[in-house]
Length: 399
Image 1 (cartoon, rainbow, N blue to C red):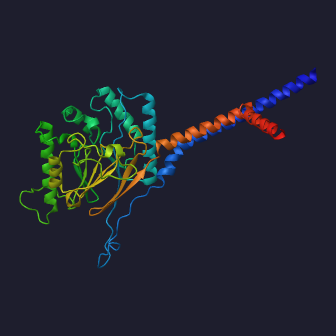
Image 2 (image 1 turned 180 degrees about the vertical axis):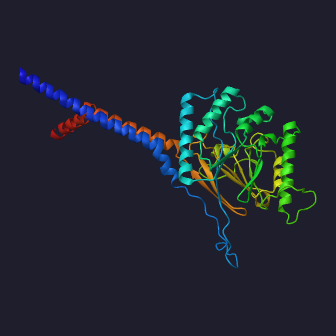
Image 3 (image 1 turned 90 degrees about the vertical axis):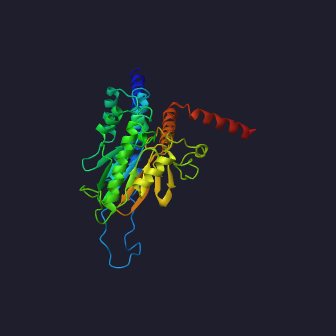
């Protein structure tokens, strides 16, 4: 009797030991999958990105003695983060999307070391109607997700979801946005001029906000034109001159184009959307306003957002416009951002893709399936069908 009790106790201890070891292995596997999908995958994907290289004077075949290299500004451009608000944002959706953007942004800062980050509008999803309390909460979450060291500048332009479309925007919403983000429209860094415009206000209907926006752009145009002259012409005043290089234009709405039919690449608009005509003043700026911007500012490069898809358009005089895709999984499966190496006279752009949401979800599904098999094998629920099949095969062989 005592021996049988001892044997039963030994079997029980062996079973507990086996199950404890199995639980430990399963916990380690779950932690490994979480670590890979929520941390390591961002490093593995973004590590493949690198800053584009500019042609040196020797590469370009410039005759004569080699010139000293110009200082290069490393700039990141991203768009349409759409941080969810209190009205339409489910807590789980907020958690998932904001964690994805936080890990992607923090990993990119650590690996790529940009000097400046530009966000091209629609930072928030509900800025156009959020209350002061909800706005303060959204802003707090934004600075948590997009925190950055003091030596990295972060600048942003307003989008229609930040201040509303033309019929929704007002001075209060614009001032509220500009209180959080630097309202400076024109600034220079390392000899490079950047013009950041509120494209929502370029409706062209003569409203007070629109008139002030156009007057501000005319003043910027005048200042840029004066700076391009070797000798200060009349009417330029005593204002400090800017670098003589053509500016880079940053805005939310793209300049006018009929549709995305000529856009290509894996992050371009899907085929069923490419040929859908764009609505002026809603999907893109109007043709008249687009022509004015090109005429007034004469930019050498334009970067915009809003469409959530990638596109490159050559405007008149060879001015390139790059539509930057959304940075969030909420808007596309394969988010990305643009990396720019910029000097006063040249620039080079490259795209950096973030992990695809499908890839992360597939990894989770495969890992869950494998873990289920590991859990079921000791219970013989998985092995029983195989043993049954083997017995059936043996029976047929003996017949």
